[in-house]
Length: 256
Image (cartoon, rainbow, N blue to C red):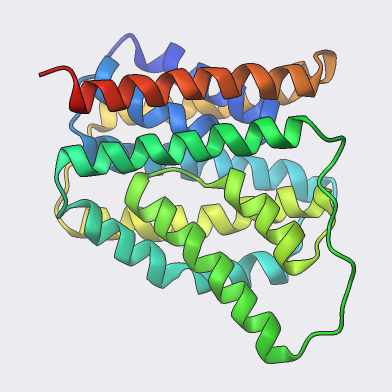
């Protein structure tokens, strides 16, 4: 077991617990650049980490009554095709394309987090009467997007899932956060099964302690965040993500 797995997992968990999302984007670069894995195996290992932390998060939010199980399971099932497609695609594209796409995703996460930090809360759209088909199509679109991101890059996509559930499906913020974790858990489980079914090997001696430390860190981060300004945390992490994206792009195009 790499001695770095535990502190790195703890760091990812702390970010996830403190911010409710976004921390999983740190797992893939950590597995690649600090623990020596190639991108495909790193994104596979990240899926296990995302699955463990999201299940732990669901348990915490469900206890507070902040999980809409019907919506979560429905959107999660709608994203299965995207999760499978993303997982299969990740095994077929080059390292440069995969990491460049990941860097762009990190920039989107940074911009989303910075924008949300600038307002007191994400306001849901006013309830409007929608047909059954309209609701189903929205759920399918949201689920597919999250599924593709999860399967392709091995991240939870909470920075996409929460706004999509609030703005796209009209949910309140608190249940949207808890429900997004159900969606993420389903898609990460499906993506992981697809990867393992393709005979990809996982360095369990590294990933399992990383995931366990991540779960512990998530619980600590969730409690510690109550003592720090959430806006300060989001803005600081956004700056960190921009730096990470810059490093990834420079490593792909400038360092040769």
